[in-house]
Amino acid sequence: MFNKLKAKLTGFKEKIGSKIDEKAVAIEPEEVIDVPHEDTQPLASVPSDQDSPEDTPVQAKTEEAMHVSEPVIEETAAQTDSPDKKKFGFAQKAKALVFEREFILEEDDLEEPLWELEMALLESDIALSVSEAIVESVKSQLVGTRRRIGSNTGNIVEDALKKAIYDVMSANVFDLDEYVKDAEKPVHIVFIGINGTGKTTSIAKLSKRFKDQGMSVVVAAGDTFRAGAIDQLAIHAEKIGVKIIKHQEQGDPAAVIYDAIQHAKANNADVVLSDTAGRMHTNVNLMEQLKKVCRVAPPDLIIFVDEAVAGNDAVERAAQFNDAVAINGSILTKTDADSKGGAAISIAYITGRPILFLGMGQGYDDLRKFDPQWFVDQLFAE
Image 1 (cartoon, rainbow, N blue to C red):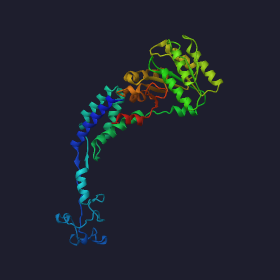
Image 2: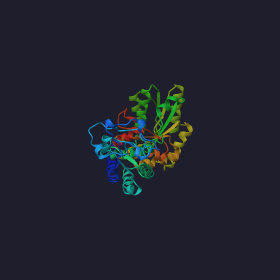
Image 3: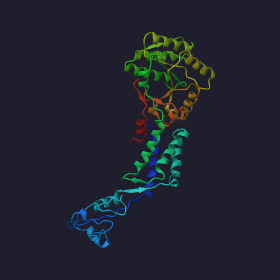
Image 4: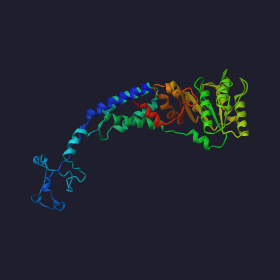
């Protein structure tokens, strides 16, 4: 999953890591005061600012003092020119020379790698505005500030990438389970999208999910346009054990869904999940039909369903449907087969509406609640 995007992010990490190594310099060890144990002076004898230089017992470290076999004092209470200056003993000094470096990257240092990162994101089906937001975030984190390196420059770059992608994906987060649990019943949810993206299967998966949570579910076979759509939903409903309301093919979808709402109210059902015919936002007749459904049986939520593997096409369709009927969230199917991850990263940012679930397989339980942190971790998993 996401293998192509993983490879591109790894390439960027390596390139910036090399640039950091090139720009990094060892941290200069601080001045050390080492005094033989037997000659250690009490704190009270440390000269004040008013004492003359002749009265100062120890003014500086000498080569002889650094090689004595006696223990040394690593810190003293003596005042230095800079009150914030730390004093290192010999071991600390050596450690700093080996392990501790720092760097400052300038904008020119990152111009070429950031351009390559943006191209890599676009090639991974991440929308242009989203790619620009990620690149700008990485740039702001790495350019112009003095950073200290531990043992791995790659960690610095990876942390910047993780934060940039996480911020984009977590801008809109919504817990559907909690919403349905707390909302006035019945909760009516309408599913929309184009043909063949997995609306009916997603309805079946959510029906199973809500039933497992102890809720009663009614499904409405509102896709009266596609041959076999009613039978497909009926088979799922029978397997899961939920009530289905259906009319004949080519019937009025608004009437089917209205009847489902009335049945849910009469039987104290908790949730109504309404299937609709696949349509493009440019199909005027079907869009008017959808608007009629929303007038006759107003939904509490409208969920857009599309395939993660559709990439930028899914992002564009999500934006267009959102403009037409104001979606409340999205479900992305076939995420387990997505090598790029672009749609999942982009849709919430572009539409301003959350991704609710990711379809991860064909089983009824193969529906994963969307978690931005989990998603980012998958991108950087070994």
